[in-house]
Picture 1 (cartoon, helix red, strand yellow):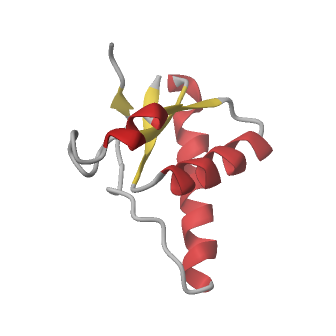
Picture 2: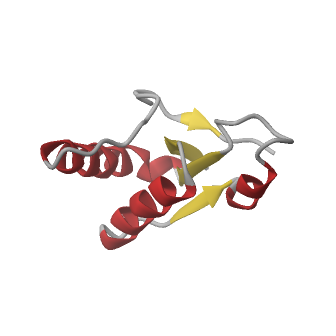
Length: 90
């Protein structure tokens, strides 16, 4: 699996997950259970949305579209601008 979106919060991750699933792209939220460990773990970089490698280009288009729509309405997804697929190992 490859990371298509690095989330700031579990809410961001689920927003992206629902958009991907609506587009017919299977995905998985990584680090969802770690959000309760804030204070013990780093404050950011814990939660990500990953897709299969072959779905990454289409998934990235979906994430970009979600981000564009939110910006038009005064909101923003705080993404690390993943212009390249990031391989998830482990």
